Length: 255
Image (tube, rainbow, N blue to C red; front, side):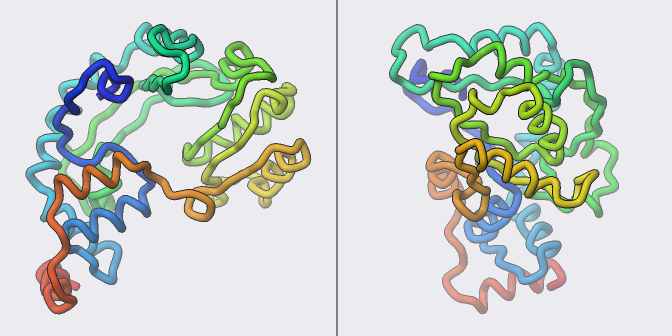
């Protein structure tokens, strides 16, 4: 997929389900494309899971086979070096680099119990032990990486939806004088994970006072790109033709 995004392959590899997106946007798109527009979010997720069972199984099997290969500090270091270097072929063409790591204001390792398909499955009611995988992931000190990789004359958009890790990363970036390296902050802040009330606003205000635009996921931009929408259009059925059919689907899963 990375080679295709970077123009090294002309044919896009087959992907079992659309490859990314914010949770809420994913629920909405999956709901429309699978005909699962149930009122209850839990029923909608259950309907989506049933409608996408074959694709989910294929993606899950593929992911389990890739965990050991991706869980490599050497792979992460190579990717970090590549990410800060200009593209070799065409310096004007965007270059994508995917780094299989967690981020914080320190280096190290983190143990997590992850459900690959948590976005489109109701995790709270899934008691199948085979549905989860225990992983030990490297942590990248992204504050230091930014400081060592960019200069003020570079154009840097810092985009993050990192489930509370922003409260470690952004204050330290500010404290270490890293704001001149950032030209825009695009984020989702997670106030329910705050240690100090109002920290989302405090961080936003510090960026704003430094003259750095701050845009918010779901308000200023959507949580997916044009490739994501195309996958839905190409690979998923259109919703049933009328609301009666939609309600029938929802009733079948207990709406």
